Image (tube, rainbow, N blue to C red; front, side, top):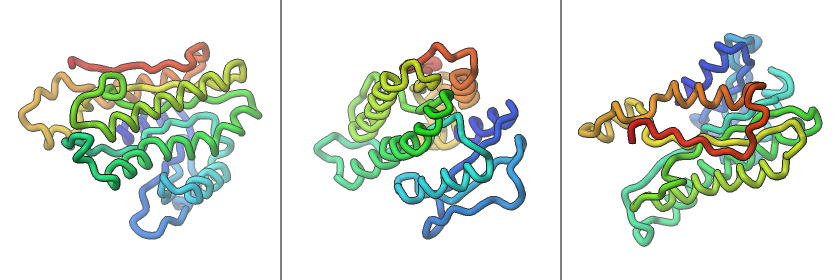
Length: 221
């Protein structure tokens, strides 16, 4: 999904900055060459680390200019256990990946958007945040927290030229999900291209009146 989102914005002529999971100790680095509408900036960044996020945003701003769009699509999944069976490590890891990272990036980028009185923020949640299912407690709560963060921010930015929204897809049609659920009907799943198209629309001038909305993408589920 992340690759699809990046490509969709590049095709639209945007300058794109991508935080890349570091292989070792996180150090922000500029990609070789100058970023362009067809070539993104990439920087190693632990998205759960306050210091890494600040360093990445600073480097991305120097490379690409002041950001006026934040698409938060970082996250992780773990499920299959009841709440009483869920370890604290899994609980905290899922909240860090899905929720803390969103807070850190939003906090870093929102002040500049407010000063310029323009900006779009879109969080990628999940349909299980809207309709929780058994054995997905840690993930569902983290993704629901992401929607609450969006709703609070949307109230706070009213009338500023900034909007904050979210998408909540059900199962995505990816190779990883197909491998994990080989007997499922993947034709009912949500194509990642549809998620990218919806996000691009929410970041467009045509969506300027949409604020505080969660758009569920259910496919054939």
